Length: 365
Ligand SMILES: *Cc1c(COP(=O)(O)O)cnc(C)c1O
Image 1 (spheres, rainbow, N blue to C red):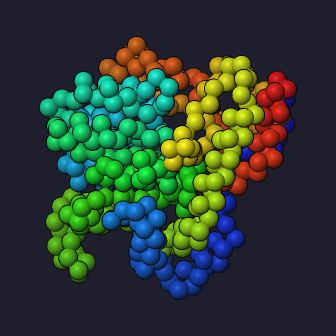
Image 2 (spheres, rainbow, N blue to C red; image 1 turned 90 degrees about the vertical axis):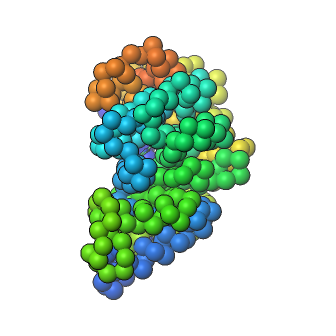
């Protein structure tokens, strides 16, 4: 028998000023993509230290816009790590491209750059580096290899907002960086995404792609390229703007949760932390662990009202990505995580007392 959930796996609140900010936007008829969206974009660009940033409807669509600008289409190949949320694969697949997987590092769930070269072919159009749970892909060697082949690099930083690598924000290394504003992310507008780019030329193209490929001042004046409706709206921007002052505290809280679990669960048999490197400027999005006997663990925690999530992150096991990829031996490190990846209760509004209760419950098992 399970008791009702007392400790949810994820907890986030948009803050005390959110309801009024949203009401204010609606009362002022600011419901389309307008001034508040631009303000939100400017403040986020400053926060991340990037020259150009665009809000859009999801992290998936941010990836999609970047891939459209890189010219990814039917028959092209896009290289991604063998571990990620499936959205990383779906974006290139939606454009008719083929996904080529590269295994992850032995002890960190990010692309193993030593295996990147072998995955490149004449059809490779783009590489997506995923900074899973705020853990950085080694961007310098990746960029060097990509540059030598003239391949565009997109960072999937959807789980890495404000996480840093060599003194810079993740998402600011590649030609493009994508972020998510979904509910289970560091900053949320319910649904939403951000796309960062470095050049003015890419910025102008993304602005056009976001709005049906139009350019020029007057709506419909000039249809320049293929685009879509990837526009954001000011109601969501209002919800996002009021959370910006809360972000630094959220980062600190996520680090405190990571540390509490690391200390509290040190030496527990069958459990290993998948931690961000705080000393290097990284911070985690969630408390993610490798758990030997996952199914039983989740069941026994549920019996105590504690929600633990099983994460299926091995893309080599996802059928629609392609049967030719289903060979587990090709991705031994991703395979080693498969069936063992869990998320313990975390999130910006998860009280540290809850974390302590979870730790005690695990010791009592
Ligand atoms: C959340 C997420 C996405 C997609 O973002 P959505 O806003 O849900 O579309 C892509 N990649 C990773 C790694 C994610 O965690």
